[in-house]
Image (cartoon, rainbow, N blue to C red; front, side, top):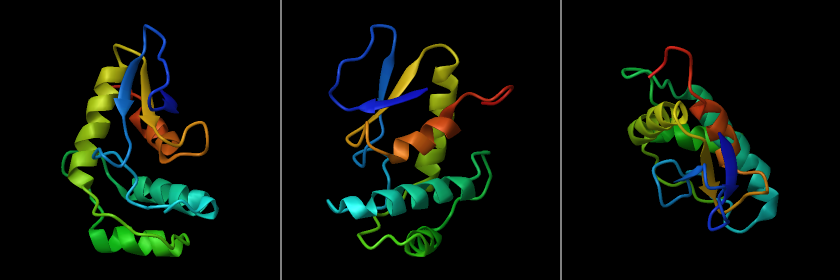
Length: 130
């Protein structure tokens, strides 16, 4: 699983999976064009993923938890509505797909630090997983 920039060419054997804010896998923490917010929004997303249990009936952080995590990490911009159930399904789908083909998670940020970096780690297929 790799991370790339939306719109850039893909190797012929790699499948693109869009993960920007237009998708369920987008980062709910908004930088609002402030580069000083890149680390806080990426750190908050990483922390949020640590709270998300990808088991079918596992814990999904509430919007209040999402907001608290963002503020704790220093996010000063908007915090969008987050679809934890949808993200959990998307992660499980990406894990399954990655068993049979190389996948590149595409967002607008790459090659700069991006929430997709943390998402890629979580989307790696697990032994005996979904």
